[in-house]
Image 1 (tube, helix red, strand yellow):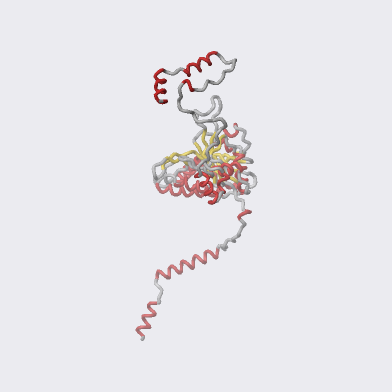
Image 2 (image 1 turned 90 degrees about the horizontal axis):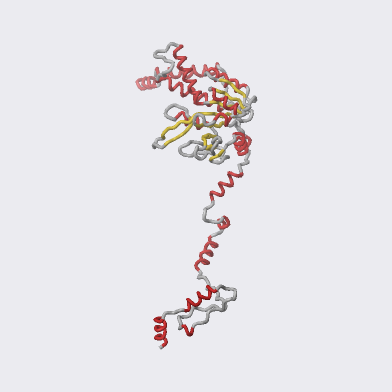
Length: 382
């Protein structure tokens, strides 16, 4: 018995590793208590009353007119990372401007917008593509200033990529979470998907196009802005804008609100915003609904037949199978008689005095019969 008791005591002794884990857990609880961390309060909201800020993205090739297109958004401010915003001014934009040509200014602009959400209705970030460049330059410059090994102002190290990509995603999320609507502008990127098909999407580099897909997932709608082909554009006039609001391979686009036509010629950002806001208020675009309803109908079936039941369809088949009734004979109509000798033929109908002589000659020509035909007819009579 003493031996068994001794073994039991030995088995219940905590191992050194277990004691270390318990001590670490106690230390974490003590640290959490010292910082007075509180569990955040959860509020259940009515989804019908929930109105979140909008996050839209417009992308396209350089020079297509992205900045002038979005520049007419109401009560807007440009957070400009490049000099292209001047084009919006020439197109009549009344927006404000925050110049953010360095990463430090971008962070300051974000902080200003977080503290002043009611000053603007729309924030236009122009452009996301250049913002990535500014962030990478900021990280490389920081590495050089800190004297890190192999640090270079232009060539990132392998370990720099993860920092760059994660920091960029976090910064995008902070703009998305602003209490003000946001319009993101990006260049177009041409890639190939896993199956080798062409793919055009916003130019956001990193892990092939994995970072671009992450950013696109945070957007409510993504539009691809193009210009009409020069062959179809009218001579002497500016080529028309063409906006893709839904996927149109190889171009990527999406309309989460389901409020816009798939392709919009000469788009107006003010009208697009209005259509999206109306769809959020349960006021869908009647033109879009009408076109979709029409597209759902079979092309060769009339609308009134869609409500017919099976019995009516059977009746239709029975009616089709019935033989048509013979058409009533006209009075005086008779089957064409067999050929008769000239002597027994009816005289031609009388000709009006006003008819030409040529018509009489035609009747005479028709009455002429070869002698051989007369012999054959005589033989038949016998």
